[in-house]
Length: 298
Image (spheres, rainbow, N blue to C red):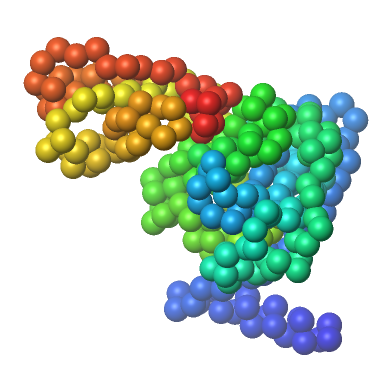
């Protein structure tokens, strides 16, 4: 068996040196560790939920995965601290398309409940929670476990400029392939392990881990600009500029809106004045930080 492994490793090494081939290796989970005494670190959590659907108010969590890790002041990941993984039985059978996507069956979740006290204890010492689609995961997490309402959150899909670093997209599997790995996708804790390696990846543009870029962006304030009562026939102009539609069903205004960095607020208001309303306008503004960004409360 060892001889076969060595042969395969040699073949993979040879292929990797050729310009005609790319080699993907199965992602091997990092081992947990104990930080050295006196080592200055902060603790973060990578979080992923699998759900019965995409409706953040009605659908239910069927699996929660978390990986707790420590990182150094320079953004280098020091190591993996702990892992949490648990199923939750929903109130109705899991839709067939979700079973096909995740591999999670009704039999696997039968009788299972995610312990709220265990989740709170696991997340208590984390200074940031990171998800690869935080606008999705945070809303579900806050519904089930109030501890996440008090945490700062970051989004590895939107708060790292992947395209500027040579990636054609921000899907987790694609980024992992770009780093030379593959994994079992759409299982919560496996996606967390994959995300850990993505955040440890040095970005070509900076030579620093992707985690550094994410943390820098997460610390910034952003402004949410609401284009209320904008002309219907200009909706495509708003969409092209990055505006999204809120239908008002969650208590927010029924309006187009966009999130911009604080430094770009004047440019955004100028766009609305000259391209949308054709007059002076004082749009509704919200200031967002990592503590309320991506939250349903925002």
